[in-house]
Image (cartoon, rainbow, N blue to C red; front, side):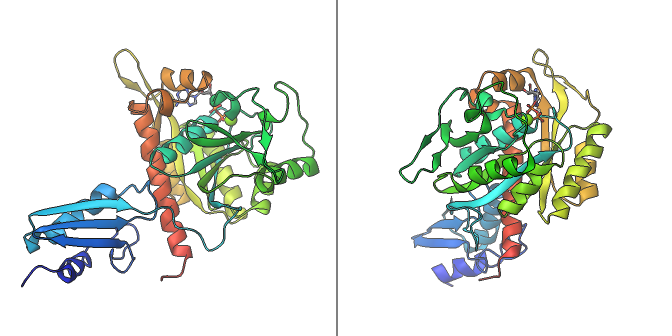
Length: 350
Ligand SMILES: Nc1ncnc2c1ncn2[C@@H]1O[C@H](COP(=O)(O)OP(=O)(O)O)[C@@H](O)[C@H]1O
Ligand SMILES: [Mg+2]
C-alpha cells in the first residue's frame, strides 16, 4: 500500500494519550500531517506546554509509524493550555492554590519555583502572594519596595520578574507593618487582588496561600473558581497531619486536589552530594496515597534553594540545571498534567 497521510492518521489512531486513555486522533491532538517523499512531519497539539508525557507520546508515535517504513519521522509539539468553558478571572485560564498545613514547610518557595518552572515550559504564569499574614514573594523575587502601577482603567498592574507576573500584599502594605486582618477587610482585599488586577492573558495563576485552613482559603474559593489545589508538606508525621487538614479544607469547598509536593525530602550535601533524609522518608507519597491524589514530586533541602530564595532570585533562575531545579521542573510538569486531565474530564468531549 502506498504511503499516504490517511495511513499515517490511521496509525496514529493506535497511539493513546497515556493519561486521558483515548487515542490522539479522537482527542483532536493531531494538528498537522505533512508527508513529503518518505518523510513525515507531525504537529501534535498538547493540552499544556508543560505536558509531562511528551517523551512517552513521541516514543509511542514512532512505534506506531514504524511499520509504514518511513525514512524519517519528525514530531513537533504545539498547543497552549486549552481555554476552560468559564474563565475564573478575566484572561486567566486556571487558578491553582498552593497550600500547606503548617508554616515553614516551604510553601512559598515551592509556589515560586513551580510558577517559574511552568513559565519555563512556555506557559504564561502569574503568582499571587495571598499570604496576607506573612507575605514572602516580594522578597523571593527581589521586588521589595517596588510600587505598583495602575492601568488606564485603574486596575492594578502586577510586577514582573523573570518572566512571571507577581503581585504581593507586601507591595501594598509597608514592609514590617503589622496587619490585623478582620474578616471583611481580608475578604475585600483579596477581592481587589483578584478582580481589580490586570493580569493580562495567563495560563496559570499560582496562589500562595497562608498556612492552615483560615479565612483567606475560604474567601479565595468564594471569590473565584479554583481549578485545583496543591498540598506542600515535609515528610514528617506532624507536618502530614496538618497537611491532611489542608486537604480536607479543599474537599469541603469542592476544590479538586491536584497533588502533593514533598519539600525538604532529604538534605543534599553541597560537598559530597550525599542525600540525608533529615525529616524522614516517604511521607509525601503516603499522604498522596491516602488522599487518592498524585504525588507530584520531592524537592531536596539544599543551601542553594535557601540562599537563592533569600537573595530574591529563586533557584529556577540562579541554577535552572541543578538537581533542585530539575525536581521543581518535574513537579511542575506533573502538576500541569494533572490539571489538563482534570479539565479534560470536566469538559464534554468534542
Ligand atoms: N527545599 C528547600 N531547601 C532549602 N531551604 C528551603 C527549602 N524550601 C524552603 N526553604 C527555606 O525554608 C524557609 C521557609 O520557606 P518558605 O517557603 O518561606 O515556607 P512557608 O511559605 O511554608 O512558610 C525559607 O528560608 C526557605 O528559603
Ligand atoms: Mg510563605
